[in-house]
Length: 134
Image (cartoon, rainbow, N blue to C red; front, side):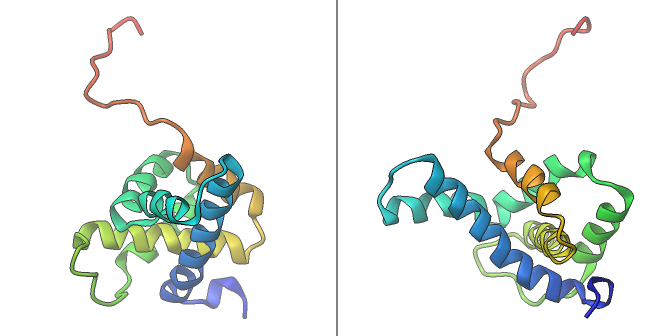
């Protein structure tokens, strides 16, 4: 089925799995940890709150087409969020997963890896003051 005909929920379903595999691969490649430690590290990236924060980092980098996929994913009815997840974070996490699924099905692995790499980049502290000359 052409990727354009897949529903946002289906794209998010596959995007969830693809995102977790990329995160796990990156963690395994980065260190020699025990499986329990790897799992704990992975949960810091795959939670709804973490995915919502990452999506905010991605937004300025997205093409119009990618941003449209994100909007479709965010606005879709994807079910009841888990009790421990904020509903807004859950909708944004679904949007991120929808985009990941979309890029995966389109075969855009390079673009997908470029975006996922942002999860491992330090985020500047937004509370730091910047001088007007910087």
